[in-house]
Length: 373
Image 1 (tube, one colour):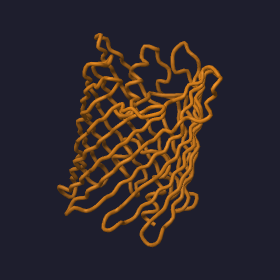
Image 2 (cartoon, rainbow, N blue to C red):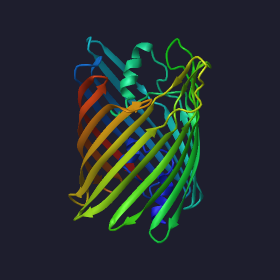
Image 3 (cartoon, rainbow, N blue to C red):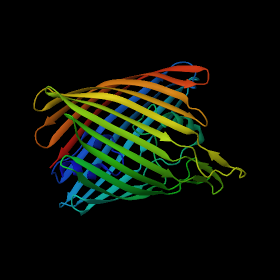
Image 4 (cartoon, rainbow, N blue to C red):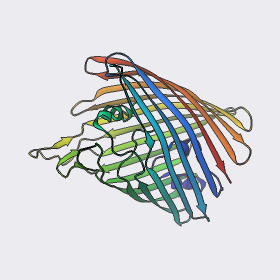
């Protein structure tokens, strides 16, 4: 049931930066995770911005209560800045929202029930002069660690299960419902009420001809966002397909990974109502490879490279940007309770507007620490 349990614990939600770096605390009762992430980009001529950078300090605490219940709390402090072509600077710093998550094994090894409460501790409301900063941070192809500083809080409930398929394969399934609270995003303007979100997921994993395959399909249904109870924004459902293929190479392990997030055409948009906004279709595509090479029993060096592309459009897709991101991770197990991860990468590519290509380069440097007992 080990492979089935992997799907069981990972089937709800997306891993945050700390969880992704430390994919499990084993049998530890208490786990503390933190780190520092710096990332930024410099843009060529053609945009209203010269550069953008962001510093994030994530913190997470995970506590196990017996064999069935796990509770974790996670938040972050972030600071972002954009330098415009006119010489001015847009800055924002503060804490993000706080997630409190409880996972209970209702049927051990078979059924996991998860509840997440998001406490609005972040910077949900800003001046309208800072909106361009959020536009840059939310650009999918740039993939910032903290694309948003806060909202109106919310609650998510979900359940997941997993089963063996034959002797070596496992199938996982999950569903969740998210309700977000209303908040005022811009000083002096109306309240924004985000639409509810439903996610359905199927995952499979197992050996394949000397390799190991993991894959999943996620379908996300989004309700309409409403501003001041009048104007509405309609976004299409999203379809996410991702997978990894791993194989041994001598003492190392080579993995190929990819995902494609497709935003479909919006449904139910009224043709006669005023204030109805249709969000265009969109697509984010990523393909990459990673080599995990043990240097010593305590040190692992992991060079990796990733291609990331974003496009959008109502009828035909137009490319918004392409980035190539080579980098390397160094993982160091310090004793039985502490692990460190150092990460560095350099992204280069271009952003696209009608008739215009803007060169883009930027680094990402990160250090993470995990302590468990």
